[in-house]
Length: 434
Image (cartoon, rainbow, N blue to C red; front, side, top):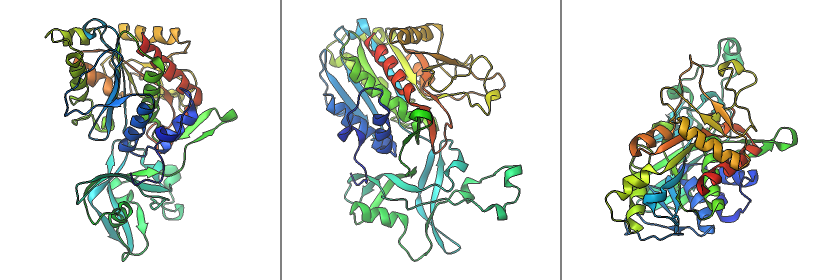
């Protein structure tokens, strides 16, 4: 790994729900590939063993393992004491990716004497929040030798400067309008004769040539606590690394149970989940099906019986009410930071929650002494979605969509409440143990 930080799971140990552990994880995870490496290290510390999708699996009650697909998605599991066909799965789902900008195959651009970096939009970032930020490049590369390397350039080699108000006099009254093709290219060097960004990455990993790359822009400012008594977490990529961190801590904290426990953290949610490792793909279905067979139950009805007795808590960030824009929420549904997990409901199934699954999660929160909130969109505002409806549709598993409340969602830097991490972790651990 050619990186300027150690994955959080390797060195940092913390109690479940500790914001210091979350911040270390976020800082070590500028990309989904780094996040999965950190989560895998955390799981291995707790005794989970890596499984290879290409090999034959054998499991028994108590087996704790994890599997990675294509570097950016991970599934962890602990086999329960009861047969899967009888007890089913207790699943927590999240996603590893966040809105950003991805380097193009031909990433070198020269304009007006500057050397810049060609990028395209990934997901739905708030463009203006990326201006005047100290940025770097991170991700994975494939060398001419076929090696796959994780990489993050040290320091802050990139910046997207805003246009001075003297050259855009109406910006404060008329609003800022950014064309991502024209206005969102970072500056790399003031001299076109300098090496390109890809040449710099090639040198950094010590390769002669790179054949391909999955590289994105990432903020370089470390996560921090702020507000009165440091009650807020200010950090990038909290949507949805908060849920990934809480889910992995939860399966570790829950301990063995009758039902088989599963955590799935998919890549590509921000762009629709349409990939081999995304929620539209077969990764979770493959893993659950293999666990049924690997546990020794060869009855053709075992898998559908196990799925019918399962429940998925799809954990993605929820919109906290913004005190300056409270009118953007339905008056009766205004979740606040620090108020606990949010059950998301949508009449037209943008969220998969129904009365039964909502009651399941609310009951688990009560058992764990965790406050719980509710969210539904204004009738005149379209809803976002997440992996919940996609997974429920593909697998037929009962699903509830929930999330930890967040401000500045899809900004380069988001704001949450430190207590909500502990709330979410305890609720998910209770779900796993039930």
